[in-house]
Amino acid sequence: MSSTESIKFPLSRWPFMYCVKCGLEADELYEHLCPACFVSSRAFVKFPSDVIIYSCRSCERFEILGDWQDSDLNETLEAAVMQNIFIEKGVELLDYDLDVRQESDIHYSVTAHLCLKIAGLELKKEGKMRVRHRDTTCPTCQKIHGNYYEAIIQIRPAAGKKFRKGEMETISEDIRKRVDAAFSSNPGVFITKEEDIHGGRDFYLGNRSYAHRIARGLVKNYGATYTESSSLWGMKDGKEIYRMTYLVRLPPYRAGDFIEKDGKLYLLASFGSDRLQCIELETWGEFPFGRNERLKVLGGKEMIQMAVVVSESSSEVQLMDPQTYRTIDLKKPDGFTASENVLIIRHEERLYLVPHSALKKGEL
Ligand SMILES: [Zn+2]
Ligand SMILES: [Zn+2]
Image (cartoon, rainbow, N blue to C red):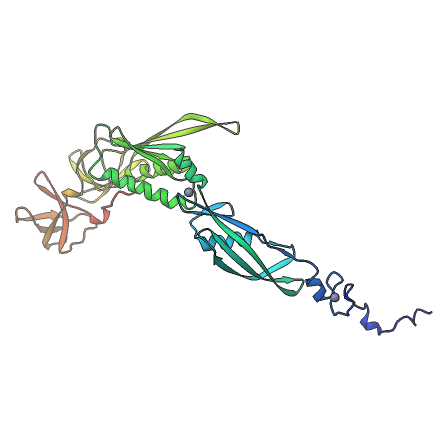
């Protein structure tokens, strides 16, 4: 037989495509199979029979992909089921849907409907599985319950002074809020315990670098000084592990205080990195003072009174003294603009205008 006689079909149909399994001719073959034989040739997907999801009985967070998150049961169940379905490489998951039926407090039966794409063919797969919800204690809560801590922040008042009324609580609340906010992204950040001691308060924190950050924040916002020390705690992976102590001592003054220096009055407006930003009350000129300068604290915002403006000229403003009802002339400080009322303080029978825009609340 000659070679030309063996060709029964036109050359344009070459190569002839027949499924090796069913023998039918096909326009396209996948691994030598027609589409129908190919999609039934194997599973492409493997469904788990059981899936376990964990939540922490203490902080109520759920574990997703090894991470403990502020999630809910539905979200966790979906993530856990999808994570446990094995899809063959090269198979694309186009869409999915889960039918979840609760069987008991802790049991769910789930049917997963998957829409897949394999080499240009769309294919639907379905699998059933049981999901169990288990209570456990997350690693963070294990540490908290085990009194784990890496650092102590010691908050103390200035030497020989006490905290002002409500101040320790304000600072404590600030610290707690910051720790709570940091916890969701860094579960190592938690407070193990708080302890009132030596006229101050100690915070035991689970994360050393975050404790350092809080201490630095107190230094910045309260003009506090701080010292750090460490003590050997143990060994981990052949390295020495230290616990840190951050001693934060508040200064005798606060932002918003009125202070006296060399016979002049100032408002302490804010704390710079190593100095105090002060505003002289006669001129409203700004003066930076060093941290160690001798300053006499006259008082805080309780000194401030309101006074009515009677009249003003280009250089002076006339006020009604709220105590004596006499009118008082004061030189206008730089940047002063009169309104109906102004803020003043009284010191040694003199009145001073207070730049209210510079009044700030000390915050962490
Ligand atoms: Zn076939
Ligand atoms: Zn927990």
